[in-house]
Amino acid sequence: MFGEKILRHEEFEEGCKATCNGPYDGKWSKTMVGYGPEDNHFVAELTYNYGVGEYQLGNDFLGLVLQSSQAVSNAKRLGWPLTKVEEALYLTHAPGGYPFYLVDKEQPPHDPVQKVCLGVSDLQRSIHYWETLLGMKVMDKNNQKKTVLLGFSDTQCKLELCDVSGAVDHGTAFGRIAFSCPREELPNLEALMKKENQKILTPLVKLDTPGKATVEVVILADPDGHEICFVGDEAFRELSAVDPKGNELLDKAMAEDKSDEWFAKHNKQKAAA
Image 1 (cartoon, rainbow, N blue to C red):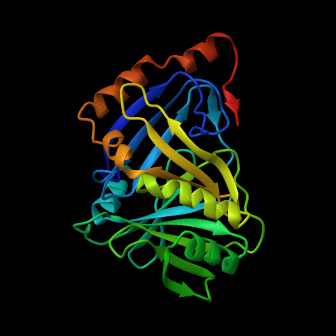
Image 2: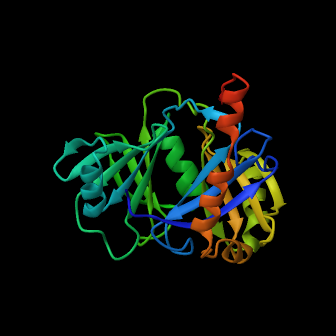
Image 3: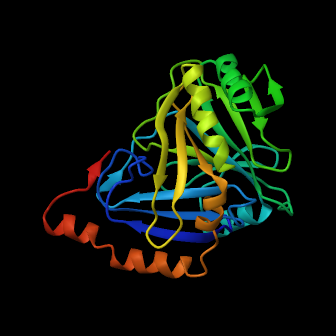
């Protein structure tokens, strides 16, 4: 509906040691979708845990904002529910309840994904973390709406932090945001977070993908528990190359997924996380 492409699809027989699929240790898969290559586009990683039927959502992820009049037209044509928020802005929800905001304007020549919005409990504390410690630049601030817009570059997707006036609830879906950086910066980033007494969820570690490049990552958590993965860019460029067989691999995996049938046959239901 949004017009994004399947960039790659990968299957794993057991849980990721860096909890890429959440705190679940069974078979899982990930599918990367976006409007273009991961080198220069914001890309969503769709994680599927075979034994989990549904997740409880919190107030941590507040939405993705896409600029695409074609996406709005597609939603209307398909009868997908749209709520008009203001002039040329619509709210819709993906399967599972995740919110998306669609800007009804011509799709830009670069990435149509304008920003990702996260909820925070203390805006000033979060600005300090993301700007001072992680090096993002404050692009805009709205005191009335209690939001701040940050980014590493004017041409990249932005991060919007919104004060939710209370505790941040992450539910059970365990999403995270990821950035690539030169591999040589990863030890320094980890050392800085140790020095500043910030939370490190996964110290520098190597992650294998069957048949593909091994990447190194450091995974952090901001003051509200938002997970942030920094991955070494050199190996990530190899891992994230667009796979021309991505659609085929995804179709094959879905056709072979008999988990719903198995649970129905045994008069059971998939776990609700």
